[in-house]
Length: 194
Image (cartoon, rainbow, N blue to C red; front, side, top):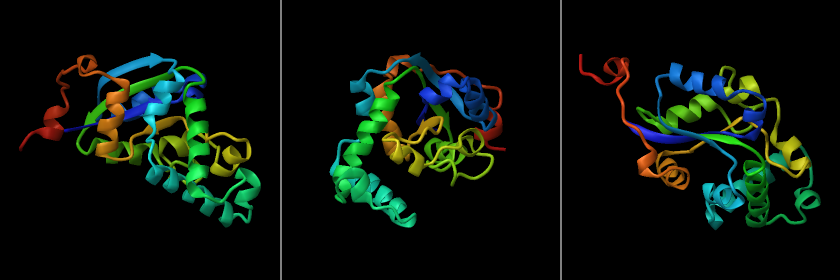
């Protein structure tokens, strides 16, 4: 069993999709062990995203490649082609959006929870996400639209990228005392030797 963090972001809350998101995870076999609704402070939202040059570079390079792919000059938009500076701008947009309104944060348990949650959520860019995933089914935004409007994509949910990221993010949003332990009837199906 592994834990991961999933957040229904402000656009998902405002559109009344909390139940839809929860339902998809529960139907897939995830168990909710912590959940709360809150309006995060900018400080809390900022702590959700890494503060490292590696992360900034990765995010910046992804935007640079996206803009190259559609023939748009990244320097025109960001005033630089430095991936770290671009990544810092994007983190600011992410923080501003996450702190803009109510969110629902959840800790979910399942076998390979982070990997399976990412599959269920779909690609970050809803237009590239596979049909049937949360982002493909419930959002039509894309990275170009977001970057053009100086904001991140509105794509319903945040899901930790891997098990280590999940462990780090869970500590930002929840204390160990907020986790509950209980047994669901279907656990024997998934986690019992036959």
